[in-house]
Length: 417
Image (cartoon, rainbow, N blue to C red):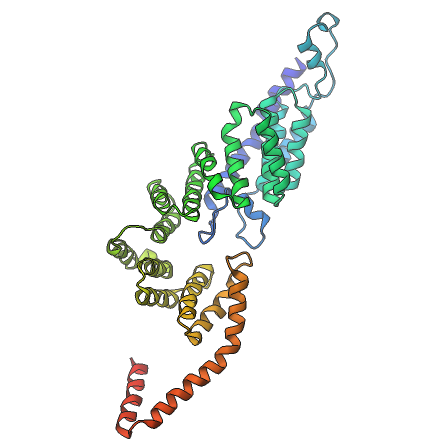
């Protein structure tokens, strides 16, 4: 009767309040977080806590943790039941008497507390909680497996990939309970993405999407899947998967970025339809804030067809239309700067690199090369500008007076225009 009372009170009193707050805060976090579409998406917004430079997710799980701690403090039963000597010959009864906990519901409070700690960003605290569960609830194999996978996920978030790999390998080798297959796929996909093994991560991520905890998570993980296809040189599958994201009725910002990303992996022969589609997007008032991304996408389409002049024209337009001096503008400037650099137009390339580099993270692809190139151009461009200026002045000086006046008038007309 005591065990029943404490189990019932835990479930419908303290735990109930905790789980309701948990659901509310988790929904707010997953729906309110603004993903960084210029990089691989995070498997879950909570992982942004690991990098203070990333936008931090919303949602407070303190109340959930407080309720779980209260449930454990008030309703945990450590005292063993009075031994029944007649049952001691039964192996199951002997195992039962060795347990560390006799409230049949309290493990749910421990598990919920570990999840809340994870989503709060306390990855080390969450790992400790799940380690406790795996050691003190050994008679519940499904719970132990789930907790160990959660422990691996905490290690991944902290960047402890060796420790995460060790847990995931052991779990897989010890015959994973069928109920945990999807959860294992989710965390293993996350581990492989962090390790950079995108091709191996794809089948696990496809499985994980089917069991995503919410619609927003399903959309986020499908977008990530498309990015992995693109990263593994499979543009057709990437284009189709971005199309799936659009078909899932996502938030407008996600839909917009999926359409933009489709242009980066477009492999059709005729780009005119895609260009028209993007041009129509540019004419809509709701896209005024995103004009830089639209013209950048048009530039990508032209560049994919080796039409460098048209591509550069649209990249320049993207820089002019940009209202947000963020990573999107920096990527466009780097792309344009590279094109100038390849054509030895160092004076034009220098401001592109100089403006873009401060906006990039140090883990951006070829960051060291781009940073070194920018430093060299900062020094070189002073001399290059002098050479170009002297060439122009000497050309003007060598002209007849009529031709010189026409050249000067053209410069004046261009400035007025």
